[in-house]
Amino acid sequence: MSGLRDATLRVLLLVVSLAGWEALVRALHVPAFILPPPSQVGAALYRGAVSGIYLQHLWITLAETLLGFVAGSVVAFVVGTALAASRRTEYFLYPYIVMFQSMPKVALAPLVVVWFGLGLTSKVVSAALIAFFPLLVNTVVGLRSADEDRIDLMRSLAASDMQIFRMLRLPTALPFIMAGLEVAMVFSLVGAIVAEFVGAEAGLGMLIQSRNFSMDVAGEFAVLFILAGMGLLLNAALVTVRRRVLFWDPSQKAASNGSALKGGL
Amino acid sequence: MAAEAIAVRGLRKEYETSRGPVLALDRIDFTVGEGEFVAIVGPSGCGKSTLLKMLAGLLPPSRGDIELRSVPITGPRRDIGVVFQSPVLFPWRTVLDNVLLPVDVQHLGREDGRARALDLLALVGLRGFEHRYPWELSGGMQQRVAITRGLIHNPAMLLMDEPFGALDAMTREGLNLELQRIWLERRKTVVFITHSIAEAVFLADRVLIMTARPGHIAEEVRVPIARPRSLDLMAAPDFAGLVGRIRAHFHAKGGLDA
Image (cartoon, rainbow over all chains, first blue to last red; front, side, top):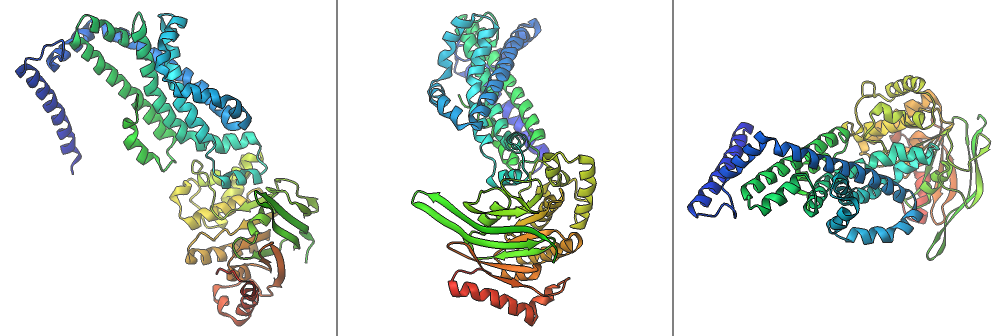
């Protein structure tokens, strides 16, 4: 098994699939407003790249996604810590959390746009709402997963609750938190795009919507590829962080293989 | 013998369960001298670990009291070192940082602590491993790190809860020799819990025999064998005699391992 040969095969597979797509569309005379051939998608990508229209919308969607991700994650971590620290807090908040969690958060997007307007804020809120839960749940589970023996060890040294949190519970929770962050990143992109669909002045989601109305399907595909690339890069950034932070976690080798598949939604 | 380091008087522990109270330990009385090595041997489920948790201040007794250097143990204290059955190392800390955990928790000063840690690591034969991570070490080496961590804050007593129970027989014998060497050098007050009679006799000045339901100290056996003791000693008649005498307790009552 040579790595070079596999890499070549991989590229070859991509070229063959694109060629097959092109050939089929042409042979079967599929209209371009149903499924455009990859050559037209490529042309649309090129045109947009030259005119700078993609970059302009990409920055906006990226900003919405990242701000929503950060806001949702920070709130989720704080609430998750409060829930993990006190059974009483959990008792009072739990019913609301269950109710809110079982609701599809994307259904809130129209309301969020009404409340926060057509600009950036509504997209950030929508992204944050969807990103919130995966991290909340993982934070609570992670902070509670510290081994009994390790807690006994810390207590036997007369450690304070704060020290136990900082030196034991938080590091123990990190693999859970990192996994939650990866899901939250994918989800916040979903939240931003959905809110753009509902109503926006700019962004890649808005661009998809407007091209759909004008039946520019090749242009729509071009934006989809850009979104896929953006999602991949955001995920890759988090995977890099995770590998550095969790170098000590034996489950990392197994996790890194499956991480691309746990996107969901 | 020197002054008493540990005094346990009239200790009793009851647990509340859904089927009413269960008596885990009753009428436990013993003392441990300063610098003495005492082993507590008993079958599984006799309450050895409960006793150790009370000595560590992790569990309050239902009745009776425990004093360490004449100060009652009412909760966790800074002058107690504990070594558990599993090494309980933190995988995100290096060997050195694991050893320094008590120093970090108790704010004892990292500079001093570091020098002491390197000394102790050399003493347990882990010189050169200080920057490795626990998962890079064998089980026996991990337990030696745990012993080093138990000693780093210079505790008044070292509690060991079946520290070699999870290791294979060869490693275990090696660590018994090692522990004897460390003890001869540092002369800590040690309470060592085990279910291996041979291990208890090999290591201890005195063996307390614990029987189950409720946990109770049935007899004390003094081990008048000079140190350093070698592994060959285990075949000697006086050693075998002591082992046999302790074993008789468990045969009479049933329930014995090793």
